[in-house]
Length: 85
View 1: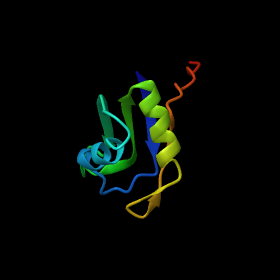
View 2: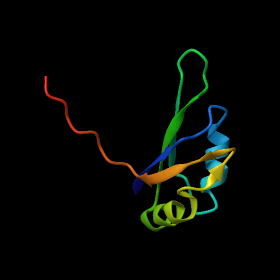
View 3: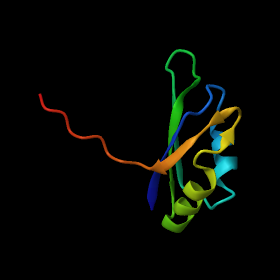
View 4: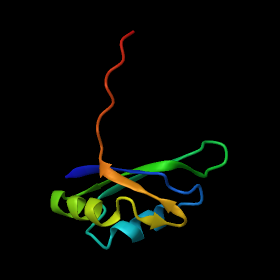
């Protein structure tokens, strides 16, 4: 299972939009659309999980493509570096 980062999403994006977009490449196993706590609108990014070969196909097919007026970024998630205190 591979986790993908999807960035530069329009604020009107819904979970159904992302599921529909990525289902062309395989099964979306999990989806986390990051939304604003007050407005409920998309903050511009999301995370999904797909099988490895499906994830690679989705990156190849969607990275840099137009989605509702925005050129989206799709790549493997890279964990944040731990912060020093």
